[in-house]
Amino acid sequence: MPTTMQESATIAEQLRALVRLQLIDTRIDQLEKLRGDLPDEIRDLEDEQAGLETRLEKYKRELKEYEVERRRARLDIEEAEMLIKRYEEQQLHVRNNREYDALTKEIEAQRQRIEAARARLEELERLSEERTAAIQEAEVRMKELEELLKSKRAELQEVLEDTKHEMEALQAKRAEAEKAVEPRYLRAYRRLRARYRDGRAVVPLERGAAAGYAVPPQQQVEIRQRKRIIACEHTGRIIVDSELFQEVSQELGFANGNSGSS
Image: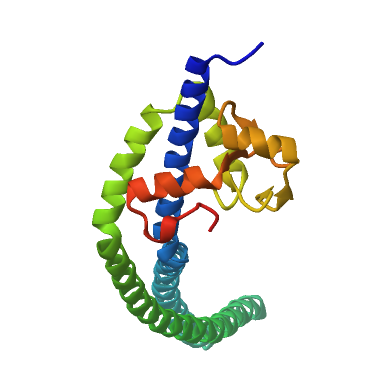
């Protein structure tokens, strides 16, 4: 069925609207790239900082627990030594061997108690030294992270401030540009934007090719006529003649006649 003049005009308008939206989105993408990896780097540093804070709290809590346990072990030793002294004094006044042997067993039990407590004290001392070293190391890293975060945040803030006004203007233009695109085409555009890393859903026909793929001669003619929306048979991207990209780019005031091919 032949395309009417009214339908052709509508298609041409939709192509222009799609190109406009693509050029705006491409410029927004370029501005966001200026941030580089800073947002991700900041998130990674913040995650490391949060993990380090958790570990520091754990280490300090364990260090306190070790000190409490050391005090308890020292008290055990003092109590055992006191009991040994008492039992040895009692041995001087026993009436038979059975009582003497019983006290000897008690003395031996207390000596074992002292030995175990001293062994635990040595272990606690080692653990405390390890935790103290770990705390010092973590605190040094924490200071490094604070400095790094301060620097990265300042760097990101500078980029955001430099691009703030242009980004706000582009977002406003983008909202208006979306309104001019029919819902079915807008849905397709969004799907294509999400599919490709470069975010290009609409690409220009340049030197007989689009997005790296050759376009058949007859299709090239139809693309330049702007009477229907043509998708690349390889990528699904919408192909538009490069002159339309140049026209819309100039209307938007983008430098160097941005073709959207960057």
